[in-house]
Image (cartoon, rainbow, N blue to C red):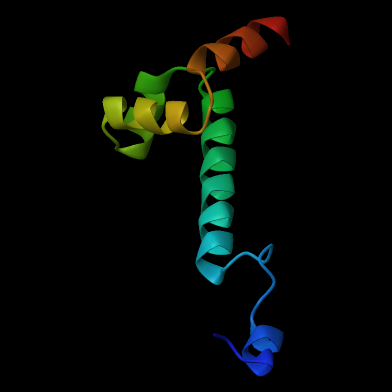
Length: 80
């Protein structure tokens, strides 16, 4: 059984932990980074991988993990 003091000092259940906030910020920064660079290379993952000195398949995994598709950046380049 918890005491009244423990209940008062307990964080609200809807408050994120510092680790959760850090992860969310890191995820957002990574997505922004990928979006900016994919835009610059018009969605060419191979070119971006070379530019970043990164394995192409790993880069493609990151793009997919962030809910993006390189094809979208190719289409935007043609539309604009």
